[in-house]
Image (cartoon, rainbow, N blue to C red):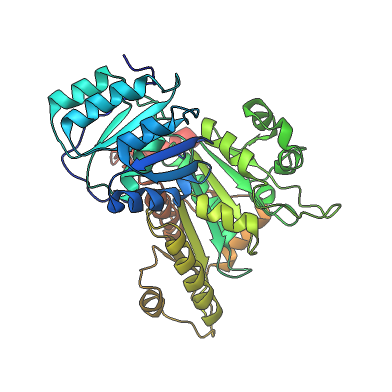
Length: 422
């Protein structure tokens, strides 16, 4: 019996393109070595190594298949994951038996083969193979297979990160982020946390009427202390399903960070929170770019003018190129309909970006101003307003959740509510 760790999945007859709603949790810092027999598979593995979900993995690719792997590990320790491509049935079983003699305990093996046979699959399972993938494979097949090795199949997918960023300063991206997070928590009943990443000028604490003594600054300046218990102490509870990781919004220090400064915070949040909404400030640095690329879904907030159109297209194109195996970023228009201001129509935005906006939020200064000054959400100011419905629709699109139907009341419901109020 081969000594590597086993976590199996049923073989599939073909390699279908990824679902736009598929959620694949990122792999941890592991070493992965692939031994390919065809250039097509090597190219797919190479492309997978560039995917954000394998960003922490150290990937090495060699040609030669099973024989090269056996020879390589006669004198070298095996990595966390070995990917093996093989052509024939006998080659697989015989090669695995030989590999078992040089393979370290705990190594996980993924086999890429061309035979779709249940009997062969059972033999591979018996020998301890972690996953068997039918060739030809594409990048997302490799990403899925490697990442699933480190995700318990019975566990619910947790830690979906949604990044919200403005195409330009002052377009209201923080307001949109906070209201969408409120809708995710209240209307979709999904435990969520808002992380305010604008440490100097963040407004999440004001918008949620919170003034916590600790927040995200305590975590980012003490990376060695970051763990689940530490992060839990920093969270401020806004509602039953919504928590806040607030920004200090003070200028007593300079907030210059390295590209990976927030990695440990995001990784810890992923393990405990089903939904993390990042309120990303409008700036372009190593860590903001990294936060956007690493997010599961991205919402760009833009006002209907030329500078916003240019910036939205630039951000959209870059993220789409950097995340080839993910759903394309989404964007919405905000502050639409300011009196006497010339605006670019939504149709022109869609034509330039080659994608439709998911919402066009109207300019309502009285309502938004009252909400901001009172530390309330738009749903608290006006539950039946069309903007409240827009925030819910955005929340549904970002989380992949269907419409939540509210129970119908009888014709006596208004009277009953009045009596209850009295």
